[in-house]
Amino acid sequence: MNNDLKQISPEIINIRRMIHENPELSYSEYNTTELINNSLTKWGLEFHPFENLETGGYCDIGNGHILAFRSDIDALPINENPCHEFCSKNSGIMHACGHDYHTAIGLGLLKYFVNHQSELDGKLRVIFQPAEEADPGGAKSVVEEKIWDNVKEIFTVHVDSGLDIGKISVINGTSSASSTVIIVKLNGPGGHTSRPHETVDLIHVTAEFTIQVLTYLREHIDPRNSFVLAFGQIHGGDYHNVIPQTVTLQGTLRTFDNSILEKLLKLIKHFATCFSKTYGLSIDIKFTNTTPGVVNDDKMYQIFIEYINKVKNESNLVILQKPSMGADDFSFYLDKVPGLYLHIGGGGNSVAHSGDFNLNENLLKPALNHLIGFVSYYFKR
Ligand SMILES: [Zn+2]
Ligand SMILES: [Zn+2]
Image (cartoon, rainbow, N blue to C red; front, side, top):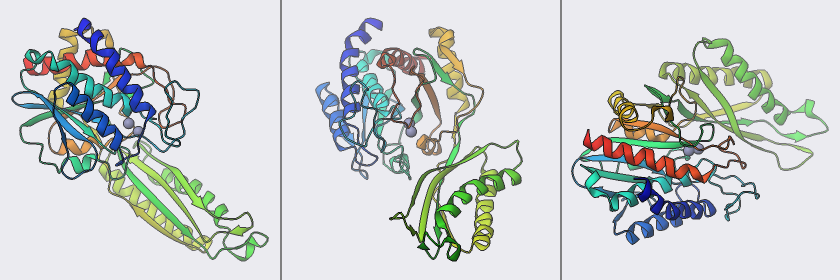
């Protein structure tokens, strides 16, 4: 396989660079979709657009029952550090979660099997999914597409900058947390910054809210249960000497347990009511649909471990002991079919969702090597 991988690697590396240089936000991945389509057409494969989404699509190779692989293709509203090689050309947009690699890996799998169809005792379906980062995520729409007949199982991979290149990690059972977007709108009378005592000093009060809500939750949730509430967006005010009438906060609430989630939602609402009375303002709170946690299928997990032990060097495998707090809408597919979520070593140790996120593109070859081997083993075992 190594020689064949050597042959396809330069093209896949090049595709990854092009995607990285031309990132597109969730649900707007038009050029990325075109690039996927053009590559597949060049290799003699057929790209199928989705019926109910303007971006993304899927491609099949082989015959028989189907194993699906999910590649997410969207980028984030982040400015990339301009020192990076093959830096984003779309100002304010960046592949800061590695979905450029995921797209390239999906294409690499298809490209390899074009010349190795005999290694496929079934059909591999690569789903190029838009908008993983959005709320609601693109997977919610993809599960409604008429593409699930005969799909037996699904798997995906996420690059991990904390894991060495060549390593692959997996966890038995729960792989990642559920995530609920929370939007808090604080409304006050507004006024002059010279007389905050005559109104509600809304920016000061919003800061208090972000601190006190966490203290309140910590006091009411059994510390043996994990959860995280953090805000990623704050908007309010237009002028230095005007106290605004509204400030909006947006963040995410993550946990592993639905009963704890229900309790957290109730507590946050209750806290907001008490807080608004204390400070003399009104608060509107909205929770969006929850993206459920990802739970790996036991049989898929066992097949993967078996594959590593029999075919690969087991020193490449890292079995995780704790799930991730990072949610993934891959969980929506798991309502349809059993699935498996893997992490692949990206090296570099930079932080995802930041402008400094930077992986080593040498990750692509070992990643493809692992995944091609797994697909062949899955069908042949
Ligand atoms: Zn992300
Ligand atoms: Zn991601």
